[in-house]
Amino acid sequence: GAVVSQHPSWVICKSGTSVKIECRSLDFQATTMFWYRQFPKQSLMLMATSNEGSKATYEQGVEKDKFLINHASLTLSTLTVTSAHPEDSSFYICSARASGTDISSYNSPLHFGNGTRLTVT
Amino acid sequence: GDSVTQMEGPVTLSEEAFLTINCTYTATGYPSLFWYVQYPGEGLQLLLKATKADDKGSNKGFEATYRKETTSFHLEKGSVQVSDSAVYFCALSRTGFQKLVFGTGTRLLVSP
Image 1: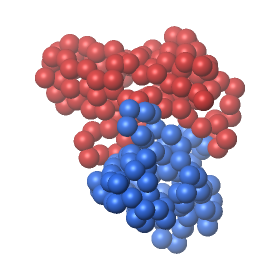
Image 2: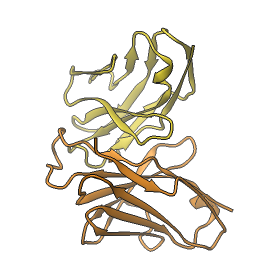
Image 3: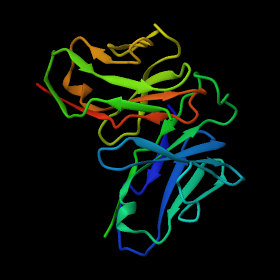
Image 4: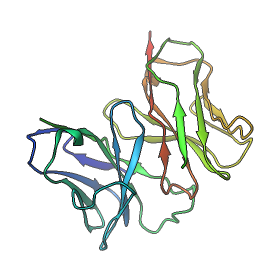
């Protein structure tokens, strides 16, 4: 089946540094990828929609300058948390949809990565 | 805005016990409803879905019925196995799998 690889699985960084998280579709091409975030005991929340070759679309309340998304190829999207602070500590998950599938169809499910646990000290 | 509320876990059961994980939603109109499962070390996988009221989604012995009158989509399984231990997420969407709105997730622990 379709596999999405997310790297790293966990990362600890110091406050003020930047962290890059990669999301790769291993055996399919993904025009669209999604980035989610989950704080402890809260819902998994959509942060942004990443489109290959164009700017990402951010959800309300998500700072685009802080969470840089690059979708430079059909198999890779990256999320960079810039100048990370302890309040950015969270679980980040990406998902991908295979290219050529109808975005409004329920027969083209999303494929999720395993997630990245970010801890900012 | 749209939201999903799930029962807080963990839910701890013995093997072969009956499982219910409650899920209620708030949304205008008629969203589609989903259950996703995340096994240890793996990504979320779609478990089942229901796209209209009174639909029943089912897969791997799990079932959930879209109840519009109670705005609920409770997950049930008649006899759980140790291998069902995972985190279960209830979610809704208005447009296919675009913009899924998730609940907090419920961890299920099944002991032999």
